[in-house]
Length: 252
Image (cartoon, rainbow, N blue to C red; front, side, top):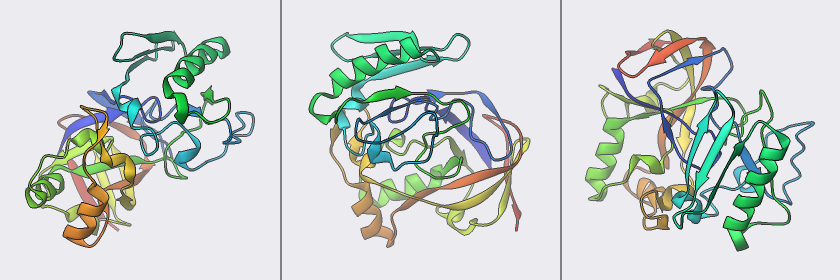
């Protein structure tokens, strides 16, 4: 099996950034993945005592399809986060500084409009990940599973709907569902498959049009009797992996 694509998502809900490689640590996620998030004003997120909260406490595609139209890019070397809206407006500021996060928060709050609750605030807490899972994970999707699903539903379902870190080839469709509790060698890292990825209403949003034009949750349930596409894995042994690297199931 082979890694075909590798992505990180610096801001929860916003643009995927393609990577050539990534270095992970035990118990960690891909660097800068879900490192930033806009917390809704009623979320109660405290950056001084960060804790995991469900996705609806933050700006997210499950609630706000309009954010799929935003283009964002993060530059780790100087902390600059740039976000652009379709009308040409946007913000570019240091997301690692309090002042910069304030400016980013103001832009995103204005863009959300009625979808903003209370006074949202944009956060980065070193060491904290705003992922949908309580534990830090790396998400993987078998390309053959997506292709099987598309063939059965009779339509394309853009891969960016599913926001995985790693896309891999060379496995039979849905083989990854049998890997739960097993370890895999991913390039130079070893991961344990923790569970399947249960899909949510965020997948309804077409990333090319920023509209809800399909219901993958209902489609998966109707076709397969479950709502999973992909798996989540925790890093057991740190290391580097890259596009083109092999993926091997090691067993329990």
